[in-house]
Length: 282
Image (cartoon, rainbow, N blue to C red; front, side):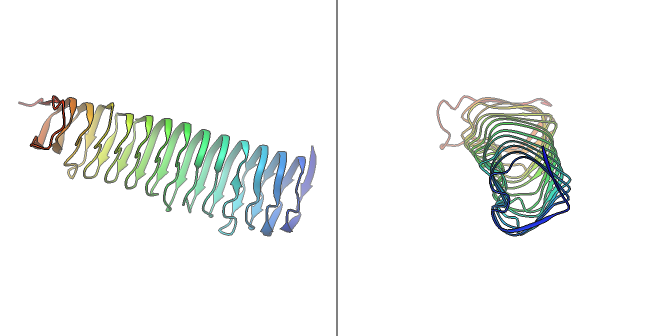
């Protein structure tokens, strides 16, 4: 492997078609596509300022780096990447990728980040601000996520999330085969139009949660005080601890809770309209 240390690069494609290179304390200044069409790249304690620095890169390791706000759209069409102990201040990261692992990474502008990533593994990652992270991702494994971005995980498939704290809106829309364990989700309109969404030991806050869902499962979950008008037109099997504010027109399945504030079953309910609703303290 070749070593480049304590250097600065800028302009157009300064390290184009580099292979088997370790960059240490390197600064990528303003310009475009600094590390493009490369393979077997290591970036250690580097600083990225210019746009699109890592495109079409195969097999890379990024550790202890800082991507400044100007390094937008920095990593697209790159495969087999691991990133550790890194801070990202720019939007639109990680698009159209395969086999991506992040450990102890903070993303301070998560706008349109993680789009169409296949094989995504996150450990202790923080997302801040922005919209639509994780759009269209598949085969996702997350343990330790803190996020206040909006519209997370739309169209995602085959996802397992553990130990997450997500503050959002319209999360998990049209997802398929998603399991969330030991987590807290705070936001309206959770899980609409989802298929096989499973929530285990989770606490949920927000209004009109989990509507139009097919194959919805809740195990040992709790809800905040404002969680009303839930499960409309959903097929659901729910085991809920404590009180829920309200249920409206579930299509089928079984809902068990300690107490329910309001149950609406009106002329607009859809067939088969056979959901069992059980209040366990009565």
